Image 1 (cartoon, rainbow, N blue to C red):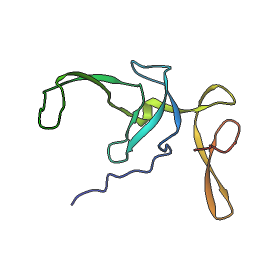
Image 2 (tube, rainbow, N blue to C red):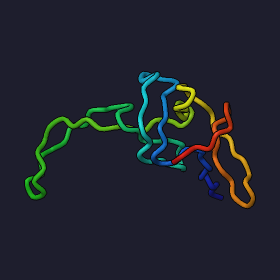
Image 3 (cartoon, helix red, strand yellow):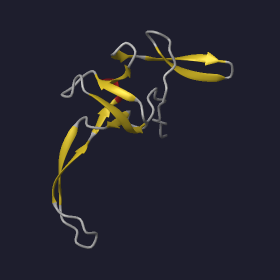
Length: 112
């Protein structure tokens, strides 16, 4: 029997986040893509890796070493609170029939 490994994430594409663990500790970036199945996110300018590519003349691609972002685990990032200028956690509040994301420290709504 196959388990459903999909999880719910508090982060969304376009959120500004800061790295709280790993080699890029303290760097800020914007979430480009989130994979709910393995709990990882691709963030602009974070966790850069080098990939060696072969040239493909049919597509007009040149070969060489290309730098691109690799995925980073969601436990190693935190949302950036611009008012307090520090990393923060995300919590939820029920507003009528809607569920909104708020910063845990000051309970202000997260604009995404």
